[in-house]
Structure formats: C-alpha cells, structure tokens
Amino acid sequence: MDILMATSMIMGIVTIVKTIVILIIIVVMITLIIAVLFTEVAMGTLTDHR
Image 1 (spheres, helix red, strand yellow):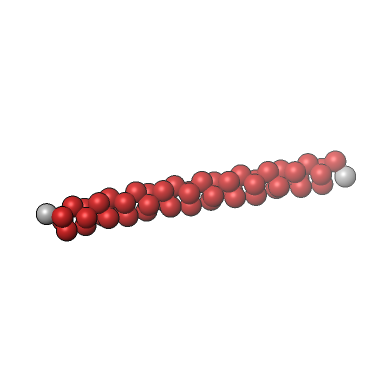
Image 2 (cartoon, one colour; image 1 turned 60 degrees about the vertical axis):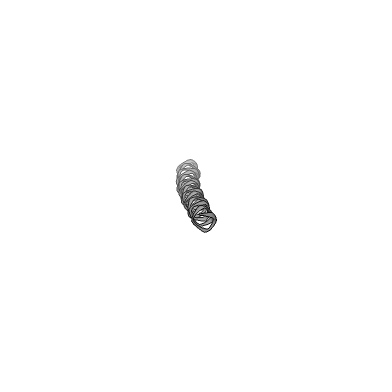
C-alpha cells in the first residue's frame, strides 16, 4: 500500500509540474508575441512620423 501511495503521489506531482510548465511556456509565448507586436507598431509609427 505504501508503494502504491508513493507512486500515486509522484504521478500527481509530475502531472502538476507538467501543467505548470505548460502554463509558463504559454505565458512566455504570449508575452513574446505581444512584445513583437508592440515593437512592430512602434517601428511603424516611427517610420510614419519620419
């Protein structure tokens, strides 16, 4: 029973870590996309003003 409990706990921790890592990756990708869009808009406005 102890081994089964330990394995189930480890599996639960692994799934939680996987979900956290996936969420972090999604947030990083979204922030990168937003930064790229902002730089594109800033460059466009700078070129338009010039």
